[in-house]
Image 1 (cartoon, helix red, strand yellow):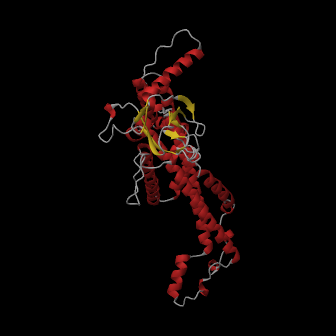
Image 2 (cartoon, rainbow, N blue to C red):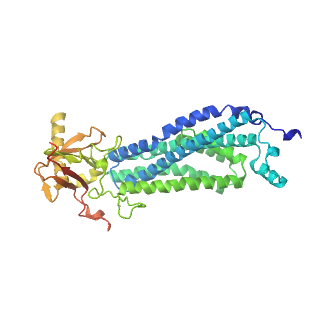
Image 3 (cartoon, rainbow, N blue to C red):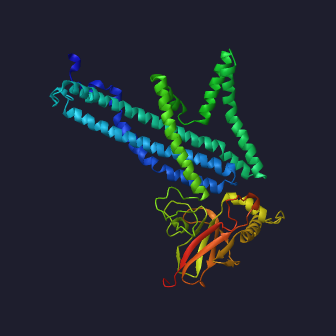
Length: 456
């Protein structure tokens, strides 16, 4: 009956596991605090990338960045969930450790008021010993933390791969003529560089018999290539993978992989859905009010991001802004963000004159600035109500709050009556790219404002 005696948690827990819980709590606490800043950081980086480097609204300019954006956002939320679950479970584990210290004799089933012996045995079988539960919970916490950290490294590697794969495409294409053709060429070349080693390795493994030395060398090359593409903890991620695979049955490992994949891809689909909504402007999702519609049309939905005095700190403009929602002066300050993707549209509308004459750099720069502003004057057609404003004086500017590059103008509103007005900006439309769902009469930008003379 020696084995029936209660055992302490320390006696049943390996020394290495006893000493890991303290640093685990520290790591989880710091990680949770850090990961809460990830979504906003990812959003800021991708807004900057789309604004500064994406010169096209086609596949490479929208679809691929949205997929990577959704993947990183999925990783950020899953990391938050993983570290939070670990912290909660580890807190439960600590509380059970304290309970076992107060009652070292564990659960005494013979003293429970259960007269029916089968029922008592069933209770003991279901709930077991406290010490055993503590050991299992300790192992579960360690596994969750290891998987979460491995997943964090995987997400960082995805970000690195994105930088390796697409940033050179944008940089090279924006510095050369015929940008679209160059972008597609560079994209497919890099895609081939990534895909060919995997195809060769698959061919050698499944279709070539013998040649063990060649297979071994090429496998080592594939590992080195993978370490180059995934430089952040590649070996650590693979070690975690091999530990779980070699210490669990094939059936259990497969089920766990399937469940984990279902969770990841479910969150990814939601994030892609959200990213698409944010980019396309269709924001009518799961309405919980029969007569409330959230839309990107500023004429119908009041968006605080459109006004400098109401925009939440840390949020970017992306399109257009006014200095305030209630204007009590004779002029309203309008700022239009200059997206890199607008270059192709401007080139179709404006043909700057040749400036290769032997003039100083400053003179040439001033001459180009004047020409470019004239192009913007023709490109941006400003309306308030039904009135076209032809004398809008645009200037290049960097927004003081968001540091976004764009065009700034002071539009005269001193003659307007008190009340609500709608400022609309139209740009030339490429009819060849219109879809049946597009409305050619819809302005590119619109922003409501209110005029008040009483606040002067």
